[in-house]
Amino acid sequence: MKISVLMTVYNGEKFIEETIQSVLDQSFKDFEYIIVDDGSTDKTKKIVKSFKDKRIKYFYAGENKGYYNMHKAINFGLSKCKGKYIARIDADDICLEHRLKIQYEYLQHNKNIFLIGGSAYLIDKDGIFICEIKKKSYPSIFHKYHMAVSNSFIHSTIMFRNEGYTYLSCSEHLFFCWLTSFGKRLKNISDYLIKYRRNPNGLVAKYDGKVK
Image 1 (cartoon, rainbow, N blue to C red):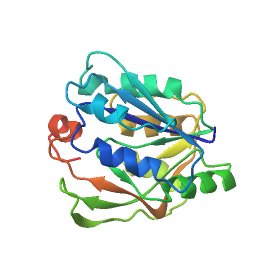
Image 2 (image 1 turned 90 degrees about the horizontal axis):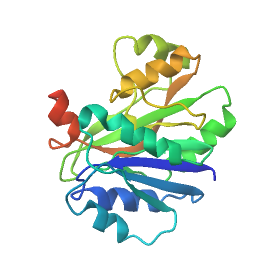
Image 3 (image 1 turned 30 degrees about the vertical axis):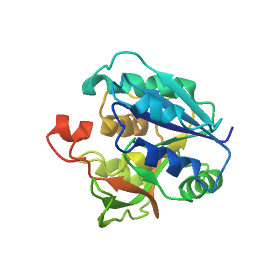
């Protein structure tokens, strides 16, 4: 198994069908799709189960653990990943067709890089284009210092080597900083990889007091 695509979801019925389809439509085909349902009470499970693709592996994680414990659902999903690389996607974002192919080939040819992110097209809740979020391909050393003050990665664009690292908290920023503490090299590539949804009803928007 070359790639494990990992997605956690809580009450994602509004956008999850489009997200799942964008993953299944990837030009790169050798992957498994791990979906961890963190206690959804809407039609999320029904929508996931409507897809008959054998690459989808659905896990219900029981009662929702809340925003500040969502890393537990992520780590549960990580424990199920069998791929050489792990790609993350949020349940309201959309993968562009060649996203997995681009990142797989990059990591295959750059053995010294542990994790990569990329650029995105920002869309609103209705899928309308807002703007481009362009990430420059700086040397990974620059990200180490930049991360001291801010998060330089779009979480739904990251792909990293499956070496057993887990999330310490709900903060993706802390995850990136923790990796660098082990000497791992992280960087962005300039390629556009996803459509990144500005979702005013998303978990990050609700709990961080800002739109994701």
